[in-house]
Length: 618
Image 1: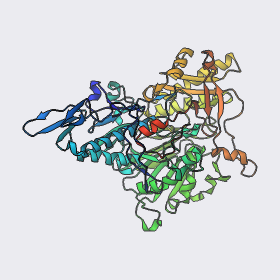
Image 2: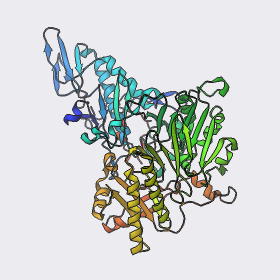
Image 3: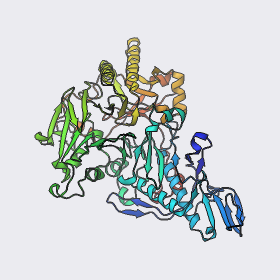
Image 4: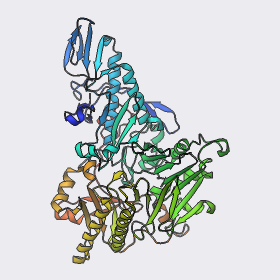
């Protein structure tokens, strides 16, 4: 099997699995979900090369029983004539921990491959049980639990739901992995977006990589074409496929012990977006923060399902939600563009009410002003301090002027003590979490101070960023201020200064520490202690202060859809003798280190053939 059971005592009881991505496994047909709701059975691939996969069966140590090679701990029981087979796979209380490394050549889609490797292992266990030569065997999993075929089928049913993004997979946010929990302090494999799926029949804890389940298409680094069949990807670019066929994990965010009747979800995209959704206790009203621009062909259906609106039939015939409030953090297309498809939906268009930051330029899609297309009676402009009471929860808008965008901002959920920071604090990654122009540095400093005051005034305990999908420490805002103050000091010494600044645990790292990070990378848990800003020395504003004219600014309008890349060399990295290329998008301000995206055909085969036959290598 492609798994290794952790020997750490704290994890052993949970049956922790570390998936080995670098070995092939036995090939099995798999049903791949399609955007139209159907499935496509991927063909069984050739037999794996035994040299690539030595001694890999789902049980340990080869023994001979009645002439048949059966590996594992086998003992004869004279009373029952049964044999006992111990698997090296856990089937109960399973954990697939997050051990991906960001940077340093990390393979795109690592957490997805880990999931697939375990999926394939479980299917092999089922094959083993179906083998007539094992009809008298008693199976125990890696943690000593007696396993029946029913147990295996229950686990496979759960894995099928997860892989197809079924809202009934029962995925919940793992609050034990929050930065200030007791288990987080004791178990060093926790951190970032850890989730729990399943029910009393089968359960699984797994990690969703901060770089995206399928990668980060926004900077051209994704495996999405590999996980889609030829019938979908033929003639389409990665960007086009991602825009149309990305999907969402529906993650229940409610804290254990919260007995309120309302619902609270994170819609975690397979790329790097995470709109938030609240539903009132009576189901009549919902609130959403940002709408993404990936998964445009599934988001409307998903929302109708979650809001009790059924299929795409007329609103009058379907009970459920009567008003969907959509709050936008800022104008960038990766937060707004899906509003076009939602407004085109025959059900949702009648219940949507848009809340837009006052003074923020409107988003343009295909030369059209998306916000201006909203019925004026269904559009509210939010000024600083605007408060929307929703199902007993006050949501407060904190406007940040002339920073990431001209007039975007943040929202606070005052009940759960969470700040949704949008892109005002960037993404939590050492490779370049956001980009700031030197000409706007004072605005960034003012914005950071305003954010810190807002957090303290409202007693906020967590931050969730638009590209940072987990409950993070509010100290992150202080780290942004530290980075900006450092940049201001450098510019005072040298007006031509520019570069990447990394703050770790509240302090700007040395060139030596930065070089170490770039060489070795950081885990998602390590990234929890990091903020980075790529400072560009340019007098040009990040965004225009007025919305572009559709007729005169057609090229600028395309920026919301055709994401461009800039290359910025980190001055701090130059000091170490290592130049790190950074990629940024003008639509997001998010910067990330360029790296070769190695998509191995062997690894895809090892993932149990959840992909098409066209194994491509980028």
